[in-house]
Image (cartoon, rainbow, N blue to C red):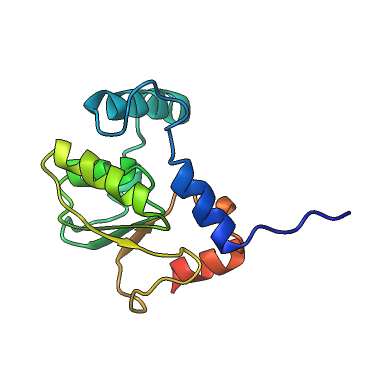
Length: 153
């Protein structure tokens, strides 16, 4: 018996029911402590205590159009906003992620345009963004090659 590949609906249902960091945290995503804990663990585990500043230096103009594709709980949106980037958009495949991202941004008094998007085929115009940040997303898509092509588009 072969295992069937997940459909896009399977992916949406999984992430809508299991937002990033929900199972690991003892806090709710409407509490500041949820984000403090996520920041610390992510920074320590992924970046050995310091976020690599080169991630932000590749975007020379703070007014550039920046998309965080697969924004999840808004970690990268918050990071870009805290570095004074002004034209931020966050896209995710679930409403739950966008709600959590919005709450996180409000904690820093930051703003970003948020929208439901499928990373394999977004509704954005071709060549609209100056920079697309897409971390920890591509391997979760049903068609990673389509996702990479969409980012390049």
